[in-house]
Structure formats: structure tokens, C-alpha cells
Length: 427
Ligand code: ZN
Image 1 (cartoon, rainbow, N blue to C red):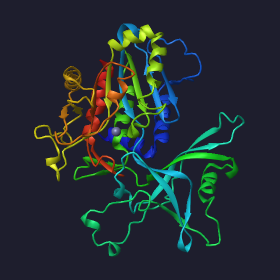
Image 2 (cartoon, rainbow, N blue to C red):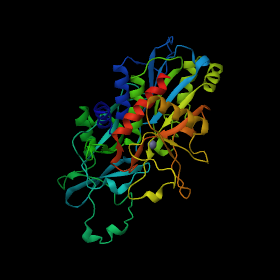
Image 3 (cartoon, rainbow, N blue to C red):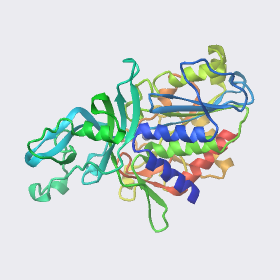
Image 4 (tube, rainbow, N blue to C red):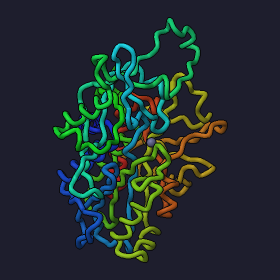
């Protein structure tokens, strides 16, 4: 249990944003004998048991281990998760100078963040910076994580809004802008952020062409509870499933089927990017691995996908929000997600397959369906089936506070998911 908790915390602390989460997965894969492939080059000869990965946009990564049989004869086993999480992106020309030399940054909300959880926390920035290279078509990308807290979003004092605890609508543009510091009133604020980035990366400010930067909570992942049964950290949705998928990939042996771990980007905004699940990025890779479209079509018919995205545990303060008879609980094991209107790919057959995998792994599992009066969320599974029409299950671990800047999950469930995923890959 200790080992699972500490490896999850290591991944979370190294992954303040999607760019760094992908970097972490890449590093772990390479350290464990997976070979990086250049998607623009011909694939090498794929021998049984050989292990490779490709990346896309520095925010998504696709790893596979060849089975002892070719995919056309045995199919693929896939675990899919996502690297992105809701938060704030820094806009271009972001610096705004206010009274007293206070400088704040203009931001934009990414995905469905719970805004008020971001107030009054030491924040910083991470993501990627694009630098001038020799070829204008291929500038240089550098990932960046500013470790020291640089920013804070100060809340308005209660004395100016006595109704603050009675429901307080927030404007993303007015209420949520983070403060960067105080400068001499005579100075221009324009280059402050670029100067900081240049200093961090030890490059010239003029060579910074652009950036994709997000805010993150600088407080590390923490165990919480009488028996340290919970973990508190941002981005558990969906880095906890990235962790369990990676764990399974690194703790399983080659089987007849080819094992695949896919970590997509942009799930939180609908997956509609070249590195998202709605693109053909994974399909194209699997077709190349299979050897032809005919081989892929045969493989798809024999494949099974676990679409792993975090789920909702029944909340002790709001049990009425849940379905009357299906209450996933913390520590109750992975949650199979079911929806009559097919927002989840799960059907009776695929739910049975996953429940059987859990049983074989000695892991409990539970079921989630929406309260019939609530719409619920969506995830990767049914988007992926538009590219890869294969059997699959939507599942995730139970958690509280999804999309808060700090979410809560249960360490026992993380161990269960790791075991269940490893069992699946080892089948
Ligand atoms: Zn998610």
C-alpha cells in the first residue's frame, strides 16, 4: 500500500500540468525499457514482447508491448486515460498593471474548474515555452515548471460582500485573475512574465515566441485521514488512472494480445484536438502496429478497451445526489460506469468482463449510474469507439470534489485499480 501511495504522489507532484504528466510517463517508460519511436519514421520490426511508445504534442503518449501473436490474430488490450485537468490558462499579453504597482495576469478557464477552490492559494505556472529555432516551421519546445509560488488569487473580504456565504456567483474575467507581484509604479509590466520565463529557462527573452502556460497549486499531494486513507491533490482526475495504467504496463508480462496504454489530452474540453481521443492518433498507430487496415479490422474485433476516468463516490453530505440503489463508496474498489443513453461505452457484456477481471485480481468493484434527474458527465470511451469500434468498459476510481483544485480519493482504491489493471494486461 505504501509503495502505491508514494508512487502515485510522485507522479502527481511531478505533473502539475498535462505537459509534465506526459513527460513523467515518457521518463518512466524509457527507464523501464520502452523505446521511443518517431511517428514520422517507418516503424521498426515489431518482435513479440518488444516495447515502444510515441508521443503527440508533448501532451499525450501511447505505449505498447507486442503480444506473442500478431494483433490480427489476438487483438489489443487497451487502457486509456487522460493527462489534462481543469484550471486556468494564461492569455497572451497577460500582464495588467493596477493601483500601487500591483501586477495581475489575464487568464482563461480551461475545462469545468470549480472556481472558488482556487482562491487564496500559493500558485505557480507550468506548461511549455516555444523558442525560436533554425526552422520557422519547427520552433523549439521546452517544458517548464516554475517551482516557487509566483501567484495568488486573493478573495474579496467578507466586509465588502456580506452575502458571500449565501451563494456567490463568480465572473471568470473579473473575480479570478491572479496577482503576480508589485513593481515600481514607473516600470512597464509588459515583459514581466516573459522575463521570468527567460530566467527560468536560461534563454534570451527575445527568443521566446509563445507559450502554453497554466496555473497550478504548489502545495504537494498529501495523505489525509485518521489512517491516512485519503489522498488530497489536484488532478487526481485523471492522473490517478494514468498512474494505475502505467503501473499495469510496468508490472505485466507479454501475453498473446498486444497491450496498449493511451494517455490522451484535452478530455476536459471534449477531446477534439489532434492529441485528443476524437482524433485518429491512436487508430493510426494501431493500424501501423497491426500492419494493414485489414489486420486492424480483424484486431479490433478481438480487442477490449478499459476507458479509465475517475468516478464519483457517494458524498457524505449529499447522498441524495446519487442514484437510490447504486452508491459507489470510498475504498469500495473501481467503479463501472453505466448510462442508458450510452454516454458510457459499458454494456452488460463489457461490465461482466471487467467485473470478472476484478474478481480474478481479488479486487472489489462497484457500479455508478446517474441519478435519473441529473445529466452526469462524459468521458473518453464513446469518443474512442467512433475511431475504434471495439468492446470496452468505462470505469474509474471513486473520488470526491472532482474538478476542485484539490480533489480527494482513497489509497485503497488506487491499489485495487493497479491490481485490476495489471490482471487485465496479464490475462
Ligand atoms: Zn476525467
